[in-house]
Every structure is written in structure tokens, then in C-alpha cells.
Length: 537
Image 1 (cartoon, rainbow, N blue to C red):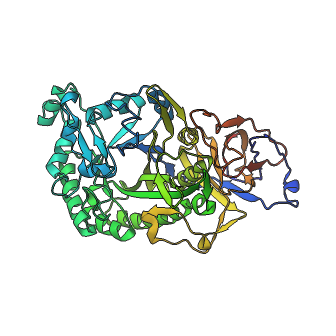
Image 2 (cartoon, rainbow, N blue to C red; image 1 turned 180 degrees about the horizontal axis):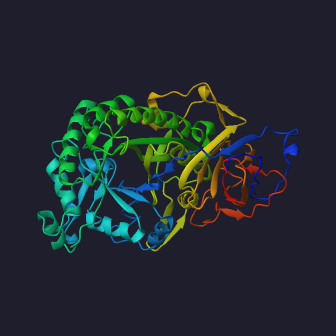
Image 3 (spheres, helix red, strand yellow; image 1 turned 180 degrees about the vertical axis):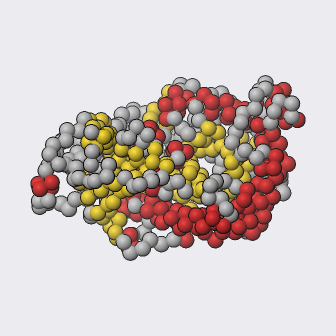
């Protein structure tokens, strides 16, 4: 692993699947410019936390919980459980999101027949509280995930919550059986504490007032967070608390006042794809948008590293959680582009999601958690059909592959090749990263990350951010490694999707890699993703 020799890896691409083998000399010939990808193993590689592959549930009135995870009466939809269990979701955030401003946990415990049905202000729907605290936590156990509960920290006089309500919720979930709230949990049939570790305090408190939300200035939120977090930690010292993050200025105020008591700052990023007649518009603005998120995460990472030193928290550092992220679709309705959660996940969404996951890997371990919205139906990895059927979208396959293969320690990747100019490209992404602009530097069409796992294997994630052209990558790997397999998620139509009647339009393919001479060339169709596996010889 000390020296490096040139080994060029081969990717098989779909329809037709061709193997292109070259020597190093042949690859230097004429033709389309290629991308060089150099993989090196640093002296002390940084860990990648599996929690970056997390998910989020929220009742957004779009068949995500009611009509997705459960039926409309809150009964579990059995068809989604084995699919989610197979994903090995590491962490799951609930109940939101925007709905936490009006969510009161006591409405969702006890006999289900006595639970209220209320109109929700945020998403203009109904909450019947049938999928409450106990139902959520038991469901998490069935799919094998770690629950993360978000507290209502709103200040609205009618819908906001209190610190006492938050403490009682934590006590209900985690208190011993002989505690006041533990007795209530036991009375409702759940004797043993659930042991939930992760608790978020607030959600997007910086945004302008809306429905049940009241906007907080950074100083107001920071002081309330200090009070809430210090009080919670005093009673429940083993919890990991997440405070609301935003811009670098907001984060500085929050860290300065509440830093000793929190473990994560949350960030939100949304790529916004424009879809007209089923086709992606302005593709570069969408496919390269994760680069702007990465610029912001780098800014926050530097700030957080310095603040952890100041707070003497280098041994137990505060990290970032990208609590909400997605590629949202704005669908053209004849007059304008309207946000829609019902727009199905397409091949180009694979490109965006892989690009964002690659960013989380590169920014590890400062980014220690991330939660995609949502796993079922709205933007989902899974889509249900009726009450007893479901199928996988392209993103399901992508998440499963990252969760299984892209864990361990990140290793260095150097890219050089054709691409676009970051300075002159608009990026369709909103959220916390609005404060940054990218430097005048090229962004290669091929994006890549690499991870070394505990068995000594290397996995390389490659994505083609070009919507129009096949890209060829020439990969140099550490000496002593050989390529043994390749996994590809690609389609000749970047707008292809899986539908109830065409469930296997976009599916992965695996092939054995035959290495010849000194290298293998990797060819990627537009918007294709591929993962290469290397083992020590």
C-alpha cells in the first residue's frame, strides 16, 4: 500500500454492455478527453459514519406516513417493512420537520380510539395521531433502525411547546419503570424504556413565521437552546442533542452560547430540479448542485473545528447533521414550475443523490449524520401500490449499495478531466448554502469517492454528472490491489423511472472485471453511477 502503480479499471455499461480493455499506452491515444482518477491511502484515514445514510419520516399530507408507512388508520403496511429492513437504515428522524411546530406527543399515546384528529396547518392535511410515539419506536425496531426524535421548540402561543413537555416526552420514552413518566409508559403496555439516544431541539427556527411557526433571531434561539439543552443534559446526561444550524453567522451564535450542551448542528439542503414533459431542464444546474452544498459544508467544517478547540471538545466534537436533503422536483404545469412530491424518482436523481452522498463522505467525520426525505412514497426510495404492494425506485438500489459498501474509512481521490466552470454555472439548490459562492475552478463531469473497509477492500463510487455524453475514467489505484467486481445503475434515458407497470426499468447490473495489462477503462453513460470493488492481491 506504500507505492502506487497505474491500474485502469473497467466499467460495463448498459445496452449494450461492452468491456473495453486498454493498456496505458493505448489510453493516451486520440479521442474524447478522459478523466484521471487517482486513489491513494493516507497515513491516518478518517472514518465515515454510517449514519450519513439515514432517513426521515414526516406526515406531509402526501401519503408518506399515512398511506405509506401505515394505512390511513395507522396500521402498519406490511409490504414496506422487509424492503426497509433490507436497506439497513442506520437512523430515522421523526416526527419532522415542519410539523414539529404543532406536534404534541401526548396526543399520540394511549388507546388509539381516544386520540384526537386535528387539522395540520403546515401541510393542510390531517393528523390523527394513530402513528404515535410507541408505534414509531416499535416500528423502528421492526425495520432495524435507530430512532431520532425531534422536539417541538416553537414559541407560537397556541401551538408551541414547553421545556417541561419536552422533558416529559424524554421521560416517557427513556425513564425507568418506577419514574412518573415510566409508569405512564408501562400503563400503556410498554414496561421497558426505549433508550432513544438522539433528540433534536427545534427545526428551522430561523425561517419567517408560517402557520404554527414563529421566527427566532439567532440570539433568541441560542439562549433558549442553552436552557433546554443544559436542562435536558442535567437529567439525561447520556443523550446526544441536536441544535438547529443554518448560516455560519447563525452557527457562531448558537455554538458560542449553547456549544457545551449539544452534540450536532443540523443543516438543510434541497436541490431543485425543473421537470417539463417528464424531462430534466437545465441539467447542469441540477446535476452539479451538490458542489455548492460541499462549499458550504467546508466553510462550516472549518468554523466547527475551531469552535471545538475553543470549547475544549476535540475529544467529543460537535458535528454536523444534514437533517434534511433531497432533489425536489418542480414540475411544469403550463405556466410555471410547481413543487411536487409525486414526481417519480428518475435516473438523473441517482446522479444528484450520489453526488450528495459523495459530499457527505468527503466531509466526514465532521458530517456525522444525514437524513434523506423521505423513504416511502413522497420523493421515496419505495413507492406503495394499494395496501399490500410496493416497489423499489432507482434510489432504493443506490442507498442500499452505499449503505453496504461505502462504510469504513475515506481515502483520497484526485480528479482531473473535462467538466464545467463552477463560477459561471448557476446551481439549483436552496437551503443553508445560499451564503456561499464557488471559486473560479472547474468541476469534472466524473465525481468520485473511495472508502477502505475493515476487511481491507476498497470501494470506489463513480458518477457521471454529464446529461449528454458518456464519460471515460482512467483510475490509478494503490499498488497491491486488483479490481474484482463492478456494480452499475444506469439507463440510456436520464429521465427513465420505475413505475407500477414498469418496475424494473432502472435496475442495477453486476459484472466481473477482467483486468488486463496495466489498466482498465471505466465508461459511464450520462447520469450513470458505478461502484468498483478492489481487493488486495
